[in-house]
Length: 281
Image 1 (spheres, rainbow, N blue to C red):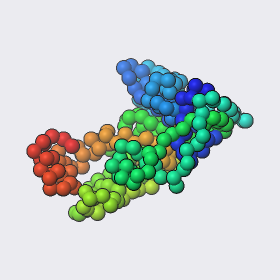
Image 2 (image 1 turned 120 degrees about the horizontal axis):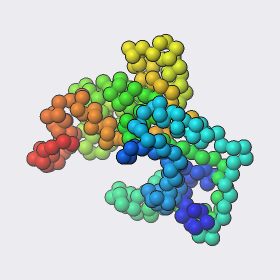
Image 3 (image 1 turned 135 degrees about the vertical axis):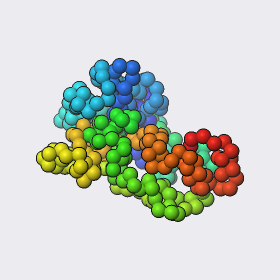
């Protein structure tokens, strides 16, 4: 792929590191695991995806542990002297960095600065010595993969340590990150720390040693089974945002109030539009 000029790195991204998303999903009667090479011009294309395993059955932890478990361990243990060296005649010189700031060619704020859009580039020479993994799946699959009890547990998020009751914020507060944007009219709950691989392993060990009592799940971060990824997950799990929001809204607030809450965050004009359209948000 590199010799063909298809690989890409962003400015200030380490040239000796290959970025790979390890994803899994159920389709029809089988559950599949694949590698998606992110350092490519078109990471969503079939050319950038490599299926490496599948089994016929649902996204269940026990099945995933048996079939996919050894592969996750192997990914975390590259052979001694691992290296990928390549030269491409399609490569170019690295673009001049801009202080680590990414600017989009489609964002009004970025365009208004007058600075050119940030572009990825293909190095003339690569010498890969490291691989950085991110992990993805749908809501059910990601929780099964990480060994969590599910997205309706006290610690419902596969990515961070937010608690379910944080979705019922006090008056005048919204479940969001702080923002200086005009629509951020209310105080934000803020962010929670990432889940850590070490924590999941420790909590699961304690949960098993203490008799696997369901009443203790929330005391152990809802880590009731072994986490299958063997490299750090902090900031490296892809959140299935749509699925989380749909499930949480149904449990935390009556459906009739979801739209009103949404509208309260918007300007008056947008609020009118939201109310006249109706439907789920």
